[in-house]
Image 1: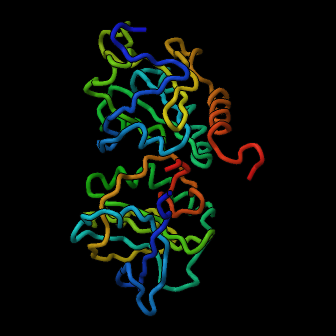
Image 2: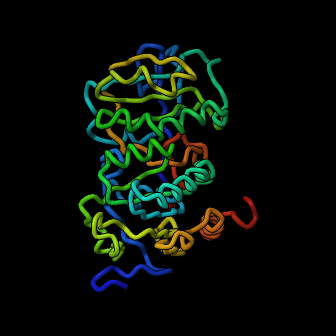
Image 3: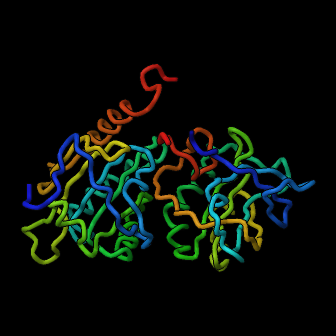
Length: 155
Length: 171
């Protein structure tokens, strides 16, 4: 049985929650950061998403592909050991709603390539555990999972 | 085959290398493969003009790998910081693995014995199934022995055809 390829997450423009929050927008995120028993306390999330339902673009738009490629090329190396995890945010099978990069130090967030698509909001969080950075070079999604989650490997 | 080395031949399983990547993070080859076909490229180092040329070729087709669920992986004896600089200069977006301590080089029997200065890897390309079974081996001591980009495409097609459900009927 394969693991679920996403986990719902709610964002109201200021804070993140794994429980539904009235008025907050729901996104699908990589489930792996939430599967760990030891989330990183006091981490910083750069949430490049908006609570407005109209803020969406197709996942396969060149600018979204470009941000994923930039993440592999230099964003992950730039963050170094500070990186906790990153995930794009899916809205449905085709819709991209944003991305979250989580780090121990927010100093580099001004360079976040995902902020080219939707502006970033800095959020202090205890929700995310550390997940190995995606090795690349695959930027396509696996069966609709929010990149970099998913795989075609049989589990 | 080098005495005492692991036998690397078509149909056998390639060792699940445990090495730091270009950022210094510990990785396993199976993790880097992530369930996808792999083009595993051992290269001498950034100082070699043949390697510069060959890796530029690989970068040219990385956009195909990016969208086709397959993964190039480059391995050398350079420290992660050197690999990061080389990778950035190339514009590569795939993983480099660092065997700076030469933990795997002798076990794989891939020492370039003619280079007694750098003691690097012999240029060798393996194409691997997602479970790391060797599909093909290309010995690249002489530049023309390396896998061409067409051969990599051919191998990725053959491996994908063997492991992807619905390949034949398109489902």
